[in-house]
Length: 119
Image (cartoon, rainbow, N blue to C red; front, side, top):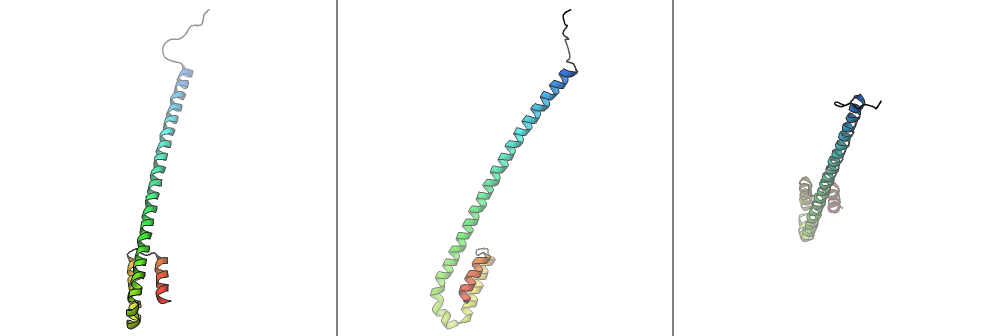
C-alpha cells in the first residue's frame, strides 16, 4: 500500500521546524542590527574623543601663547618693577590668577609661572 501524503496543514513536527527557522532568522537579523548599531556608536564615540582632543590641544596652545605673551611683556616691565618693587609682582600674580580663573592656564602652568615670578 503506497504511503498517502497528507494535504493541508502541516503536522506538529512541521510546525516546530517552521517555528525554529523563523526564530533562528529573527535572532540572526537582530544580532546583525545590534552589531551595526554598536559599530555606529563606537564610531561616534571615537569622533567625539578626537574632537575633544583637538579642543584640548587648542586650549593648551592658547594657554602657551598667553604665557609667552605674558613673559614677553615681563622684560619690558622689568625696569618699572625695579622702581615699584613688590606691587608689580603682586599685579603679575593677579594677572596669572585671572588667566587661571578664565581657564587659559592649567594648575601646573599657573604654578610654574608663579614660581618664576617669586623665585
